[in-house]
Image (tube, rainbow, N blue to C red; front, side, top):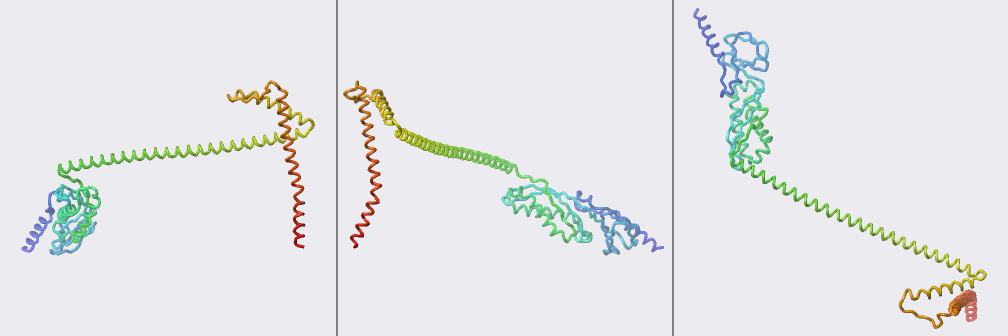
Length: 357
């Protein structure tokens, strides 16, 4: 009878201890802790939960999701761990950057329990420990960066935070998946100086862009003028070449026409009454030239017998006749030279041979 009373009291004590929810850290973290179930011999473990069972005060096993059996009085569920991803708000804290600027920064931490045994027996309050570790690590990482790099390298800062937390929380059976910075607050004076710096940087860019535009415009204008001058010179060159070619062709055409005229004139002179026609032409040209003397120059040389037309024609014919005689004499001399050239060569050879003999 006494033994039954003691067993009943022990069951009541166990039930009272197991129905009290586990309090972890602050109030914000209490929602992740589950109440300990009572040992009813037959237990149903929910999915994504791990129940740590102790037998007579010593770790026995971890119950898998589904149907499980326990021995009453000897076995009891000591810890209940959630295997889902846990989101924890990291409280706002102050940190000093490398250039001695005080920042107010907060973040969000994403965790998951990988080893329920380490999470139960490795640390008293795993979530609180990870939160404190995240705050201290954030202060350390911010102290390595200047204010400008904090804003530019938030992604690398988050990666460094995750790496540092995982190194320390490996013994606790917790894995940090991500860390994200929510807000970064800077002092008002620093914010004003940053805004002034941004405005100055924008003015600088505008000035640089304007100067580059002016330079490009000047370069384009100079290039256009250069190309225009090159094209103009090439046009002038082509014009001069075409003009020279045209003049050369004109000279050749005139020369060919004149040669043809001379050839026709010489053929006409060899015919019957050619000399009389030539004399008539020379007389006409003489009279025409004499009539134009007063039109082209103020100085006029007049013959003594200007009124005697017949004497003027006779004089012109005499000039033509003298020219004809001179030409016939030159032709005869050239023919004689051509006919006597072999004779001279023959005489020279004979005289040489005579001297040798």
